[in-house]
View 1 (cartoon, helix red, strand yellow):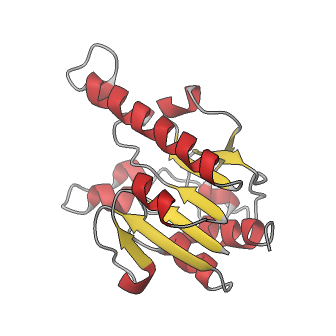
View 2 (cartoon, rainbow, N blue to C red):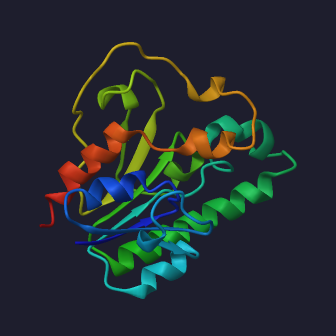
Length: 192
């Protein structure tokens, strides 16, 4: 399958699908930390038009939409317009993706975006082999909800405990390998 993995520079999801033989390509406005031969550096909205994708997986930036950002982006706050703009961009991205592809998923943690998108299913990292909590939603078109693969104990909220630093935002948003593998195993088989 030709798979576009939008808003991903780490290539963790991309590589999980590539290991199963799919032609997965990451796309982000920044360079990849992975293989540049499997990366498109551009706006994902434009990348959707590059070819007929068999599957589109989207991981839009959650900074302005996440509920944890309410103290900066909530109603009445100085940066609220940035949240409104981010919601509008994400809705536009979703609509373009589902217009161009029959198999689409859009991921975000607990977020205001879920008020505006249908068919949201939630997962936790501890359901996929990681002893952590980070409730994460997927809006799905043509794909089934992910089934847990490895429920584990030791559930900790690691993300908010990360120390400040230049890569904090990037590291907080990087996807869990167990979830990446589950997506590839469960969704990669859906359209083969």
